[in-house]
Image (cartoon, rainbow, N blue to C red; front, side, top):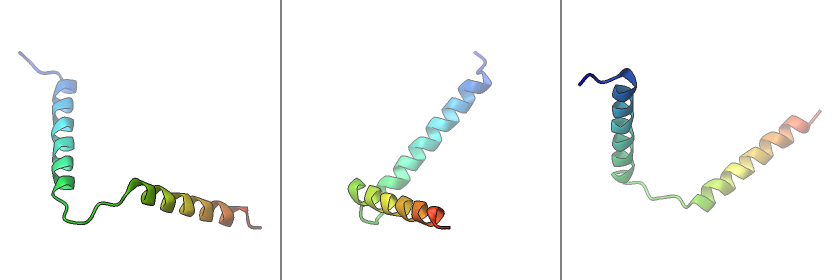
Length: 55
């Protein structure tokens, strides 16, 4: 059975996702809680918005 381009692309994408997950799981750095990440993002967004609103 011939595989379509989309099927081949989908299999490659799945392999990339699996590899990314494996790399993430094997990362020795400590995990950062989502609340911390989102708080930092909110602070950055607020800073950029404040800079843009200045004359």
